[in-house]
Image 1 (cartoon, one colour):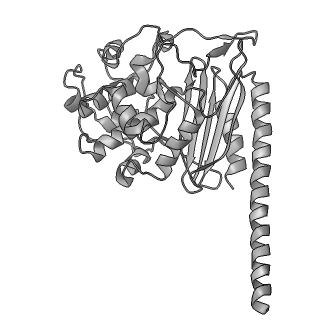
Image 2 (tube, rainbow, N blue to C red):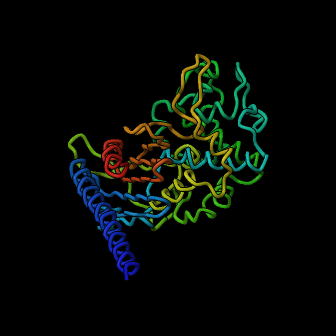
Length: 358
Protein backbone atom coordinates (compact mmCIF):
# COMPACT_ATOMS: atom_id res chain seq x y z
CA UNK A 1 0.00 0.00 0.00
CA UNK A 2 2.84 2.37 0.93
CA UNK A 3 4.53 1.63 -2.41
CA UNK A 4 1.29 2.46 -4.27
CA UNK A 5 0.90 5.76 -2.42
CA UNK A 6 4.53 6.67 -3.14
CA UNK A 7 4.07 5.84 -6.83
CA UNK A 8 0.91 7.95 -7.08
CA UNK A 9 2.64 10.83 -5.32
CA UNK A 10 5.59 10.63 -7.75
CA UNK A 11 3.24 10.59 -10.75
CA UNK A 12 1.33 13.61 -9.43
CA UNK A 13 4.51 15.55 -8.75
CA UNK A 14 5.94 14.66 -12.18
CA UNK A 15 2.69 15.71 -13.86
CA UNK A 16 2.65 18.98 -11.97
CA UNK A 17 6.28 19.68 -12.83
CA UNK A 18 5.71 18.92 -16.52
CA UNK A 19 2.59 21.07 -16.47
CA UNK A 20 4.50 24.00 -14.96
CA UNK A 21 7.25 23.71 -17.60
CA UNK A 22 4.61 23.67 -20.32
CA UNK A 23 2.88 26.69 -18.83
CA UNK A 24 6.19 28.59 -18.63
CA UNK A 25 6.89 27.87 -22.30
CA UNK A 26 3.37 28.95 -23.24
CA UNK A 27 3.91 32.22 -21.39
CA UNK A 28 7.20 32.79 -23.18
CA UNK A 29 5.56 32.21 -26.56
CA UNK A 30 2.67 34.52 -25.68
CA UNK A 31 5.12 37.28 -24.73
CA UNK A 32 7.24 36.66 -27.84
CA UNK A 33 4.16 36.91 -30.05
CA UNK A 34 3.21 40.23 -28.47
CA UNK A 35 6.74 41.54 -29.06
CA UNK A 36 6.67 40.34 -32.68
CA UNK A 37 3.32 42.01 -33.38
CA UNK A 38 4.50 45.25 -31.79
CA UNK A 39 7.72 45.16 -33.81
CA UNK A 40 5.77 44.53 -37.04
CA UNK A 41 3.41 47.43 -36.40
CA UNK A 42 6.01 49.89 -35.11
CA UNK A 43 8.26 49.39 -38.13
CA UNK A 44 5.46 49.04 -40.68
CA UNK A 45 6.79 45.68 -41.87
CA UNK A 46 4.61 44.01 -44.53
CA UNK A 47 5.47 40.40 -43.65
CA UNK A 48 7.57 38.45 -41.19
CA UNK A 49 8.20 34.84 -40.19
CA UNK A 50 9.68 33.71 -36.87
CA UNK A 51 10.66 30.18 -35.92
CA UNK A 52 12.23 29.00 -32.66
CA UNK A 53 13.48 25.52 -31.79
CA UNK A 54 14.72 23.97 -28.56
CA UNK A 55 16.53 20.65 -28.34
CA UNK A 56 16.02 20.17 -32.07
CA UNK A 57 12.22 20.61 -31.97
CA UNK A 58 10.28 23.66 -33.12
CA UNK A 59 8.51 25.20 -30.13
CA UNK A 60 7.12 28.28 -31.88
CA UNK A 61 6.75 29.11 -35.57
CA UNK A 62 4.45 31.79 -36.87
CA UNK A 63 3.86 34.05 -39.83
CA UNK A 64 2.85 37.69 -39.48
CA UNK A 65 1.42 40.00 -42.10
CA UNK A 66 1.64 39.47 -45.83
CA UNK A 67 4.15 38.18 -48.34
CA UNK A 68 2.18 40.10 -50.96
CA UNK A 69 0.29 43.18 -49.76
CA UNK A 70 -1.76 43.59 -52.92
CA UNK A 71 -2.99 39.99 -52.94
CA UNK A 72 -3.09 39.78 -49.13
CA UNK A 73 -1.11 36.54 -49.22
CA UNK A 74 -0.39 35.52 -45.64
CA UNK A 75 3.10 34.56 -44.56
CA UNK A 76 3.76 30.88 -43.87
CA UNK A 77 6.88 30.20 -41.75
CA UNK A 78 7.29 26.78 -43.36
CA UNK A 79 6.85 27.76 -47.02
CA UNK A 80 7.15 31.52 -47.66
CA UNK A 81 10.51 32.20 -49.30
CA UNK A 82 12.26 35.36 -48.14
CA UNK A 83 15.56 36.73 -49.32
CA UNK A 84 17.92 35.76 -46.53
CA UNK A 85 20.68 38.08 -47.79
CA UNK A 86 23.94 37.55 -45.87
CA UNK A 87 22.65 34.52 -43.99
CA UNK A 88 23.70 32.92 -47.28
CA UNK A 89 27.28 33.18 -45.98
CA UNK A 90 27.06 30.69 -43.08
CA UNK A 91 25.07 28.34 -45.29
CA UNK A 92 27.84 28.45 -47.89
CA UNK A 93 30.36 28.00 -45.08
CA UNK A 94 28.75 24.64 -44.38
CA UNK A 95 29.49 23.65 -47.98
CA UNK A 96 33.13 24.64 -47.49
CA UNK A 97 33.22 22.49 -44.34
CA UNK A 98 31.77 19.54 -46.24
CA UNK A 99 34.53 19.85 -48.82
CA UNK A 100 37.08 19.88 -45.99
CA UNK A 101 35.51 16.73 -44.57
CA UNK A 102 35.76 15.12 -47.99
CA UNK A 103 39.43 16.22 -48.28
CA UNK A 104 38.72 18.32 -51.34
CA UNK A 105 39.56 21.64 -49.71
CA UNK A 106 41.90 23.10 -47.10
CA UNK A 107 40.88 26.30 -45.29
CA UNK A 108 44.51 27.42 -45.12
CA UNK A 109 45.33 26.78 -48.77
CA UNK A 110 45.90 29.69 -51.16
CA UNK A 111 42.83 30.85 -53.05
CA UNK A 112 44.87 30.40 -56.24
CA UNK A 113 45.00 26.65 -55.65
CA UNK A 114 41.29 26.56 -56.48
CA UNK A 115 41.05 29.53 -58.86
CA UNK A 116 44.45 29.80 -60.56
CA UNK A 117 43.09 32.22 -63.17
CA UNK A 118 42.07 34.84 -60.57
CA UNK A 119 44.27 37.95 -61.11
CA UNK A 120 47.37 37.91 -58.95
CA UNK A 121 47.51 40.49 -56.15
CA UNK A 122 50.37 42.01 -54.20
CA UNK A 123 49.82 39.39 -51.50
CA UNK A 124 48.66 35.79 -51.48
CA UNK A 125 45.63 34.97 -49.32
CA UNK A 126 43.84 31.87 -48.11
CA UNK A 127 40.32 30.47 -48.16
CA UNK A 128 40.07 31.08 -44.41
CA UNK A 129 41.12 34.71 -44.76
CA UNK A 130 38.54 35.36 -47.47
CA UNK A 131 35.79 33.60 -45.48
CA UNK A 132 36.65 35.60 -42.36
CA UNK A 133 36.77 38.99 -44.14
CA UNK A 134 40.48 39.52 -43.44
CA UNK A 135 41.83 39.02 -46.97
CA UNK A 136 41.36 42.65 -48.04
CA UNK A 137 38.83 42.07 -50.82
CA UNK A 138 36.56 45.07 -51.23
CA UNK A 139 32.81 45.28 -50.62
CA UNK A 140 30.18 47.05 -52.77
CA UNK A 141 30.89 50.37 -54.48
CA UNK A 142 28.22 52.83 -55.51
CA UNK A 143 25.08 51.20 -56.88
CA UNK A 144 26.52 47.68 -57.09
CA UNK A 145 24.23 46.60 -54.24
CA UNK A 146 21.19 47.00 -56.51
CA UNK A 147 22.78 45.68 -59.68
CA UNK A 148 20.19 44.17 -62.02
CA UNK A 149 22.34 42.28 -64.49
CA UNK A 150 21.97 38.53 -64.66
CA UNK A 151 25.40 36.91 -64.40
CA UNK A 152 26.89 33.57 -63.42
CA UNK A 153 29.09 33.38 -60.33
CA UNK A 154 32.18 33.33 -62.53
CA UNK A 155 30.99 36.35 -64.54
CA UNK A 156 30.31 38.11 -61.24
CA UNK A 157 34.02 38.06 -60.41
CA UNK A 158 34.55 40.62 -63.18
CA UNK A 159 33.05 43.31 -60.94
CA UNK A 160 35.98 43.31 -58.51
CA UNK A 161 38.67 40.89 -59.69
CA UNK A 162 41.04 43.55 -61.04
CA UNK A 163 40.89 45.77 -57.94
CA UNK A 164 43.81 45.75 -55.49
CA UNK A 165 43.46 44.35 -52.00
CA UNK A 166 42.56 46.96 -49.37
CA UNK A 167 45.30 45.80 -46.99
CA UNK A 168 47.77 43.03 -46.33
CA UNK A 169 45.76 39.86 -45.61
CA UNK A 170 45.51 39.16 -41.91
CA UNK A 171 46.23 42.74 -40.85
CA UNK A 172 42.67 44.06 -40.71
CA UNK A 173 38.97 43.13 -40.91
CA UNK A 174 36.77 44.49 -43.69
CA UNK A 175 33.40 42.90 -44.45
CA UNK A 176 33.12 41.75 -48.05
CA UNK A 177 30.27 40.04 -49.84
CA UNK A 178 32.48 39.87 -52.94
CA UNK A 179 34.86 37.64 -51.01
CA UNK A 180 32.02 35.15 -50.77
CA UNK A 181 31.39 35.48 -54.51
CA UNK A 182 34.95 34.25 -54.85
CA UNK A 183 34.28 31.39 -52.43
CA UNK A 184 31.32 30.17 -54.47
CA UNK A 185 33.73 29.61 -57.35
CA UNK A 186 36.12 27.88 -54.93
CA UNK A 187 33.29 25.51 -53.93
CA UNK A 188 32.38 24.89 -57.57
CA UNK A 189 35.95 24.17 -58.62
CA UNK A 190 36.88 22.07 -55.59
CA UNK A 191 33.70 20.00 -55.88
CA UNK A 192 33.89 19.87 -59.69
CA UNK A 193 30.13 20.42 -59.57
CA UNK A 194 28.08 23.56 -60.33
CA UNK A 195 27.77 25.58 -57.13
CA UNK A 196 23.97 25.51 -56.85
CA UNK A 197 23.85 21.78 -57.59
CA UNK A 198 26.42 21.16 -54.89
CA UNK A 199 24.44 23.19 -52.35
CA UNK A 200 21.26 21.28 -53.14
CA UNK A 201 22.83 17.84 -52.98
CA UNK A 202 25.11 18.25 -49.95
CA UNK A 203 23.32 20.80 -47.74
CA UNK A 204 19.68 21.46 -48.62
CA UNK A 205 18.46 17.94 -49.43
CA UNK A 206 20.14 16.18 -46.48
CA UNK A 207 18.79 18.82 -44.07
CA UNK A 208 15.35 18.78 -45.74
CA UNK A 209 15.58 22.50 -46.46
CA UNK A 210 12.95 22.13 -49.16
CA UNK A 211 12.27 25.85 -49.60
CA UNK A 212 15.88 27.03 -49.77
CA UNK A 213 17.11 27.83 -53.24
CA UNK A 214 18.72 30.38 -55.53
CA UNK A 215 16.75 33.61 -55.95
CA UNK A 216 16.02 33.50 -59.69
CA UNK A 217 15.38 37.03 -60.96
CA UNK A 218 13.75 35.96 -64.21
CA UNK A 219 11.52 33.11 -62.94
CA UNK A 220 8.10 32.92 -61.38
CA UNK A 221 8.57 31.45 -57.89
CA UNK A 222 5.10 31.12 -56.35
CA UNK A 223 6.26 30.91 -52.70
CA UNK A 224 8.60 33.88 -53.00
CA UNK A 225 7.54 37.00 -51.13
CA UNK A 226 7.40 40.45 -52.69
CA UNK A 227 10.25 42.72 -51.62
CA UNK A 228 9.43 46.08 -50.07
CA UNK A 229 11.12 49.27 -48.94
CA UNK A 230 10.03 52.45 -47.18
CA UNK A 231 9.95 55.86 -48.83
CA UNK A 232 11.06 58.98 -46.94
CA UNK A 233 7.36 59.55 -46.28
CA UNK A 234 7.24 56.12 -44.55
CA UNK A 235 5.12 54.64 -47.33
CA UNK A 236 5.66 50.97 -48.20
CA UNK A 237 6.50 50.40 -51.88
CA UNK A 238 8.12 47.66 -53.91
CA UNK A 239 11.91 47.69 -53.90
CA UNK A 240 13.95 47.89 -57.09
CA UNK A 241 14.36 44.77 -59.20
CA UNK A 242 17.74 43.18 -58.60
CA UNK A 243 19.60 40.12 -59.80
CA UNK A 244 21.46 38.26 -57.07
CA UNK A 245 22.46 35.09 -58.90
CA UNK A 246 26.11 36.09 -59.26
CA UNK A 247 26.47 36.73 -55.51
CA UNK A 248 24.41 33.79 -54.28
CA UNK A 249 27.02 32.57 -51.77
CA UNK A 250 27.22 35.98 -50.11
CA UNK A 251 23.59 37.03 -50.33
CA UNK A 252 21.52 35.33 -53.02
CA UNK A 253 19.56 32.51 -51.42
CA UNK A 254 15.86 32.37 -50.65
CA UNK A 255 14.67 30.41 -47.63
CA UNK A 256 11.81 29.88 -45.19
CA UNK A 257 12.26 30.50 -41.48
CA UNK A 258 11.68 26.84 -40.59
CA UNK A 259 14.36 25.82 -43.09
CA UNK A 260 16.84 28.10 -41.35
CA UNK A 261 16.02 26.49 -38.02
CA UNK A 262 16.88 23.11 -39.57
CA UNK A 263 20.21 24.57 -40.65
CA UNK A 264 20.81 26.06 -37.21
CA UNK A 265 20.22 22.71 -35.56
CA UNK A 266 22.84 21.15 -37.84
CA UNK A 267 25.34 23.68 -36.53
CA UNK A 268 24.44 22.87 -32.91
CA UNK A 269 24.26 19.09 -33.38
CA UNK A 270 26.00 18.20 -36.65
CA UNK A 271 24.93 15.17 -38.62
CA UNK A 272 26.23 15.92 -42.12
CA UNK A 273 29.33 17.86 -41.01
CA UNK A 274 32.13 16.65 -38.77
CA UNK A 275 32.65 18.18 -35.33
CA UNK A 276 36.17 19.13 -36.41
CA UNK A 277 35.18 21.13 -39.49
CA UNK A 278 32.25 22.71 -37.64
CA UNK A 279 34.62 23.93 -34.94
CA UNK A 280 36.65 25.68 -37.64
CA UNK A 281 33.53 27.59 -38.74
CA UNK A 282 32.69 28.94 -35.30
CA UNK A 283 36.20 29.75 -34.06
CA UNK A 284 36.87 33.53 -34.28
CA UNK A 285 39.77 34.54 -36.48
CA UNK A 286 42.66 36.53 -35.05
CA UNK A 287 44.43 39.41 -36.77
CA UNK A 288 48.21 39.71 -36.96
CA UNK A 289 47.95 42.12 -34.01
CA UNK A 290 46.41 39.37 -31.86
CA UNK A 291 42.99 41.04 -31.86
CA UNK A 292 39.95 38.78 -32.29
CA UNK A 293 37.58 39.56 -35.14
CA UNK A 294 34.60 37.91 -33.39
CA UNK A 295 33.92 36.28 -36.76
CA UNK A 296 34.80 32.78 -37.84
CA UNK A 297 34.21 31.26 -41.28
CA UNK A 298 30.85 32.72 -42.26
CA UNK A 299 29.62 33.02 -38.67
CA UNK A 300 29.55 35.94 -36.27
CA UNK A 301 30.51 34.84 -32.75
CA UNK A 302 29.09 36.53 -29.66
CA UNK A 303 27.94 36.06 -26.08
CA UNK A 304 24.60 36.23 -24.33
CA UNK A 305 24.15 38.18 -21.11
CA UNK A 306 24.79 34.85 -19.37
CA UNK A 307 28.16 34.66 -21.18
CA UNK A 308 27.07 31.62 -23.20
CA UNK A 309 27.92 31.39 -26.91
CA UNK A 310 25.97 32.78 -29.84
CA UNK A 311 26.68 31.81 -33.44
CA UNK A 312 24.81 33.79 -36.03
CA UNK A 313 24.42 36.22 -38.87
CA UNK A 314 22.19 39.06 -39.94
CA UNK A 315 21.17 39.82 -43.49
CA UNK A 316 20.21 43.01 -45.27
CA UNK A 317 19.15 43.20 -48.91
CA UNK A 318 16.55 44.71 -51.19
CA UNK A 319 13.30 43.78 -49.44
CA UNK A 320 15.08 41.78 -46.75
CA UNK A 321 16.08 42.21 -43.11
CA UNK A 322 16.93 38.87 -41.54
CA UNK A 323 18.52 37.23 -38.53
CA UNK A 324 19.62 33.72 -37.58
CA UNK A 325 21.01 32.94 -34.12
CA UNK A 326 22.16 29.64 -32.64
CA UNK A 327 22.73 29.08 -28.92
CA UNK A 328 24.68 25.83 -28.57
CA UNK A 329 24.71 25.64 -24.75
CA UNK A 330 20.95 26.20 -24.52
CA UNK A 331 20.30 24.18 -27.72
CA UNK A 332 18.07 26.94 -29.11
CA UNK A 333 17.79 28.38 -32.63
CA UNK A 334 15.96 31.61 -33.51
CA UNK A 335 15.18 32.57 -37.12
CA UNK A 336 13.54 35.88 -38.11
CA UNK A 337 12.82 36.83 -41.72
CA UNK A 338 11.13 39.98 -43.05
CA UNK A 339 10.35 41.33 -46.52
CA UNK A 340 11.34 44.94 -45.80
CA UNK A 341 14.67 46.67 -46.38
CA UNK A 342 16.49 48.18 -43.40
CA UNK A 343 14.24 46.96 -40.61
CA UNK A 344 16.01 47.04 -37.18
CA UNK A 345 16.18 43.26 -37.04
CA UNK A 346 18.75 43.09 -34.24
CA UNK A 347 16.28 44.80 -31.89
CA UNK A 348 13.71 42.02 -32.04
CA UNK A 349 16.46 39.40 -32.02
CA UNK A 350 17.75 40.73 -28.71
CA UNK A 351 14.25 40.88 -27.23
CA UNK A 352 13.49 37.30 -28.20
CA UNK A 353 16.85 36.19 -26.85
CA UNK A 354 15.93 37.60 -23.44
CA UNK A 355 12.72 35.59 -23.49
CA UNK A 356 13.98 32.21 -24.68
CA UNK A 357 17.50 32.12 -23.18
CA UNK A 358 16.96 31.47 -19.47
